[in-house]
Amino acid sequence: MGILFKKKPYSVGLALSGGGAKGFAHIGVFRALEEFDIRPDIIVGTSAGALMGSLFADGYSAGEIEQLFNEREFAEFAQIQLPKSGIFDSSRFSLFLEQHLRAQRFEELQIPLIVVATDLDNGKSRAFTSGPIVEPVRASCSVPVLFSPVLIDGVHYVDGGLFHNFPVSFIRSQCEYVIGVNVTPYVPRDYGQNLYGIAERSFHYLFRANTTQDRRDCDLLIETEKFGQYKLFDLKNANQIVEVGYHTALEALEGFLSGRKKKAPVKPFLQKFPKLQKLKSAYL
Image 1 (spheres, rainbow, N blue to C red):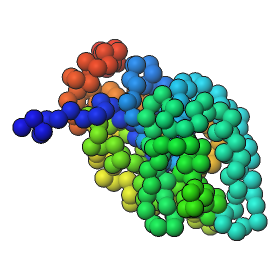
Image 2: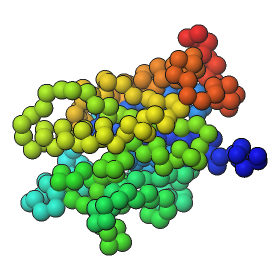
Image 3: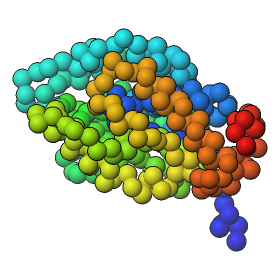
Image 4: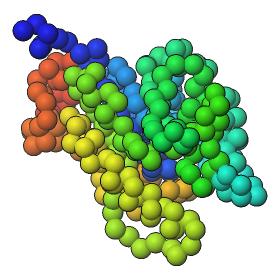
């Protein structure tokens, strides 16, 4: 019987979806978690989730991460190239990470991190958990066709969202509670009949198809249709997206505490994070 009730390795896991600029919403979620002293024991991220997750796992606060991206331009992370394996070369993205990450290897991070990328050569997902951080994160963010694949140990890797845009499954069995942030819920909208518009639309369909079960597997799911009003590379509205993420996180926490969205026992969660009593008292 003891085996049936064996304690899981981690109490709280945080799963962060991909979504391009919509990933700025993760910063708002980090801010909400900080307000209630909720510190995840492990983080898993795909694409933008891998980028934001790596900085949070590295000890950056939500405010510090937001400051890193204030008034940034797309050209600071990628440059156009003669199309060969991708329209853009993302080597500048690696330079950004090298300059700002305090840890250079996964083992040096303050919180364990899993970065999910897609092995393009063999058609499968790859979870990076050790070794150098920069290139796996860059690979996880490399949307096919738009960005060139990233070569790691002789294998070409691209965006992890092809198979797992919302990588809850990578930590579900290891965590008592999983907080999931999905910044790419599908929202029907008009799209441009051009290369970018068609590519963005196609990836939205792909993400919707591979996130269904992961959404169900969250104890606390943070998402809103409001994310759908922003485009994949909408850097100009970064601060707005952060605020949407923050308020969506507060609403999701309130729903979880009220029992309206009950997926797991609330009492142990409250005992672990007593500051949440303030939020519960404010709404209930």
